[in-house]
Amino acid sequence: MAIRLLSASPIFSAAGGLLSAGLFVTTVSFMISTPGVVVPELGLPAITVAPGQFLLKDVGLFAASFWVFVDSLKAVVRR
Image (cartoon, rainbow, N blue to C red; front, side, top):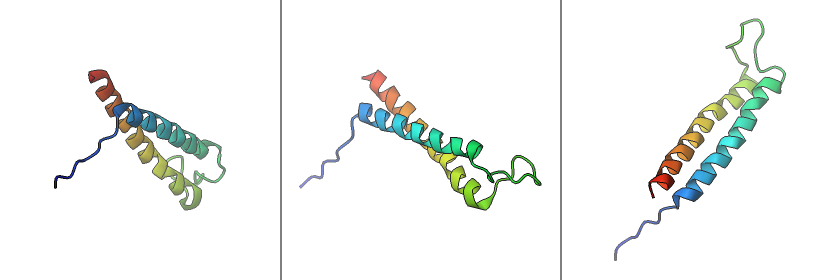
């Protein structure tokens, strides 16, 4: 009995990548508007543990979502 793998349609994958990238752009914008993200005594690149590092993960998740969007969009154009 052969196992058949199902693949998602590239258009759905592109839509999901775009929507999740938009979500993570929104949450990364909280780093600008949330007080206490930057430690003023250490300068701009230093962020706090509580809100800053929690929001920093969204930068990587945004990059992964955008990558999925672009890669899926290439697959849609190739069809």
